[in-house]
Length: 34
Image (cartoon, rainbow, N blue to C red; front, side):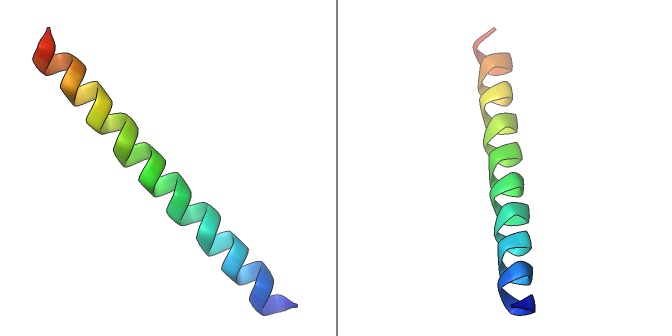
């Protein structure tokens, strides 16, 4: 259904945002260590 497609798109968007934030967090930690 259309609602399921919207929910899946939102889920992918949220996971992408979380992943990018986490990746930046790791980059920041590496910068601090060096």
